[in-house]
Length: 126
Image (cartoon, rainbow, N blue to C red; front, side):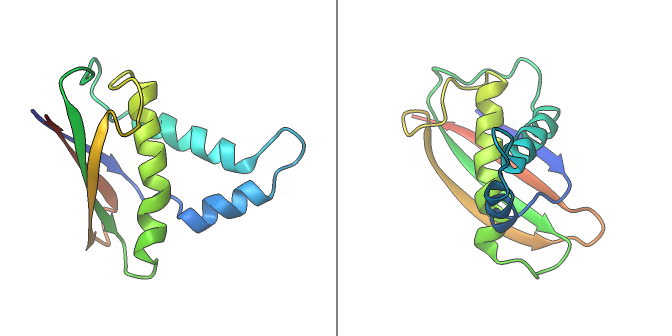
């Protein structure tokens, strides 16, 4: 079974997320607020009722369409992996995003100045 999810937009880099976590004030963390906002955004694009639990491990293929080549690749993908996989758990697609549920992932990078986005192909494997 293969499912493709397209999430429009350009997401914060891993460096931006780390910087936001450094600005914590008391119990409030701008990093956590950023993560929660982006997970809500991603969940809008996960098909309603998609449930892959118990069907096998997932292999996630991410294709990042950036508006330019300015950001380091590890900054482009690191944060998005975290929020996307956590959004899958929140949406009930899988019970956890640990190694029992996710077999692996691959990343590809393209440039699209007019329509930045992330396309995620989810393949259920044995």
